[in-house]
Amino acid sequence: MTLDGDVDFWPDSVRLLLDRMKKNKKVAAVCGRIHPIGDGPMIWYQQFEYAVGHWLQKATEHVFGCVLCCPGCFSLFRGSALMDDNVMKMYTTEPTEAIHYIQYEQGEDRWLCTLLLQQGYKIEYCAGADALTFAPETFHDFYIQRRRWSPSTLANIIDLIGSWRITVKMNDNMSVPFMMYQFVLLASSIIAPGTVVYMIAGSYSAVLGIDLWKSYLLSVVPVFLYVLLCLKAKTETQINVAAILSSVYAIVMLLVTVGTIINLATSSIYSPTVLFLVCVAVIFVVAGLLHPNEIFCLTNGILTTSLSHLLLSSSLSSSCATSM
Image (tube, rainbow, N blue to C red):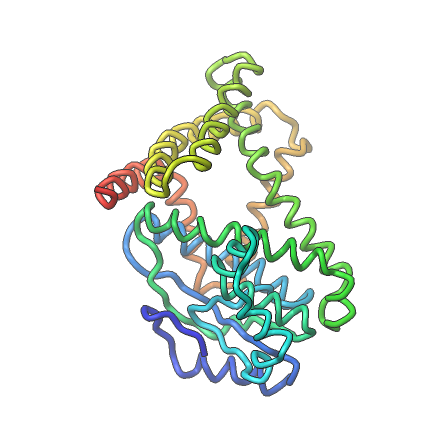
């Protein structure tokens, strides 16, 4: 059983995880439903984020193939699977290359799960096994956490997709369509920043009346400069600048919201933008209705969107105070 020091859970949650293990000897790990707790808008956002992630992504992975990551804060692992030579020996390998430090040491739970999946074991998700964990309440802590998680996630998915032939052959629960699904998610993650920059540029043009090419330049330059900063500056400097940029982009995203509304008002109901936003809204609402005890998480998502400028401004103050 893996736990974080600040996690709280109930005996029934552990019993549900054990039941999953008893039903299938090939199940090497089971994770439960993690609920972030704490105070402040940053917690509200994470409650929404965790809810959508568990309702949609974890559940889809469980049904369609295998869960890719059992969080170390509350998961159950089978000892015999962990002691498999091809799992534990590889897991304890010392990193020698740059990619190793990202994959091995920034997301140890995901790396362990990748090895289990490649060895043919099944990993499941149990929605009824609830656990509470204290999540980051300040931008500083949140940024550091996600700065570890994001590269590790990408590195492990690339590793899994790169070995798809062997993994599909070894693991009966992971099919070619499932690996294609993961590839689509990976591609979406890679193009997502570009999509956001494109939306920002369009909003500059629609709301402020700036020339389209100047809008693109105004959108791309800050991102490019921050990338250069990350290559040269220390971690604390990166975090402080990220907090400042986040406060600025909170205002920018208000422009994006206005620009999106303008586009919706001037577009046909059958346009791709309108259909996409309606479909996303319907998916979230239906998922919330299927989880009535957690439907308040959707409200948290709306609140944190409308209060994003306040959230990021307070986070900036907390970040600067922490660095000082």
